[in-house]
Image (cartoon, rainbow, N blue to C red; front, side, top):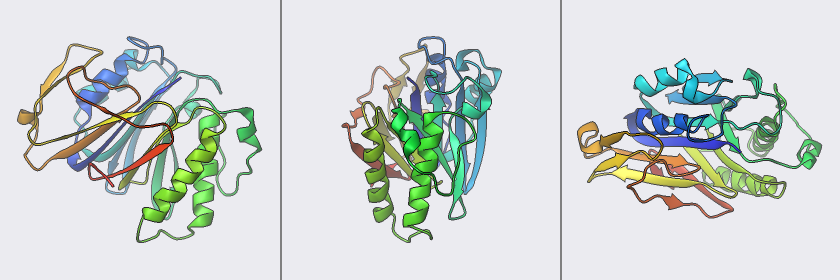
Length: 255
C-alpha cells in the first residue's frame, strides 16, 4: 500500500526533514516506488508537485528535500499501486474546488469494487484509482450537505468522519484531507502523529542518517504537528490513532 505524510503548523514551516525520511521509502527503504506528490498551502493557494517516478530517484523530490518551502498545511503521498496504472493522473494528492477553496486529498489503502457503485454527483475522477473516485464521492457528499462554507467546522468534521466510516466498510481507508486551514486525518488501520512544541529537542530519522536540533530551527511559540503512516523518527514518541478515529488539526493542534 501507500504511505501518507501531513503537517499542520501555527507558523509557516518547511517539511524538509520529514520529507527526507518519507522519500527514502519511495523505492529505497520501502516499496512505494509508483509515484509521489506533495501540496503546500500558502494562504488559500496550493503549490503542488507530482511525479510518477520513485521519490528516492526523483530530482523533483530532491528539490523538495533541499528547498525549504514554508507552509501552514502540507499533504504528501508515496504510492504503491494497486488500482490504476502508474501515470501522472493517478498520482496523489488529488485536488478539487469547494466553497472557493482548493481541497487536497491523499489515501492509503485499497477499497472494494463496490466503491464504484456509489453515485457521483458533482465531481468526477480524471484517473482510474479507487482513491480519486472515493475523493470525488466524499467531496460531492460534502457539497450536497453544506452548499455554503459553514462558520463552524465542527459539523463538517463530524460529517467527514461519517463518510470516512462508510468508506472504511469497503476496505482499507486511511486519509489526509484539507482545504488550507483544517487538516483532517482519518485512521482506518494505521496512522500516527506527533506535535512538536517548546521545549524542543533533537529528532533523528529512521530511514536515513539525519538529525535536526529543533531548538535551533524554531521559536518558543512554534507548534508543528506531523502525521505519517509509520513514524518517521526513532527517538520520539508518536501517538497512534485508533482505527475509526478522525482527528482535525488547526494551526498544529488537535481540535
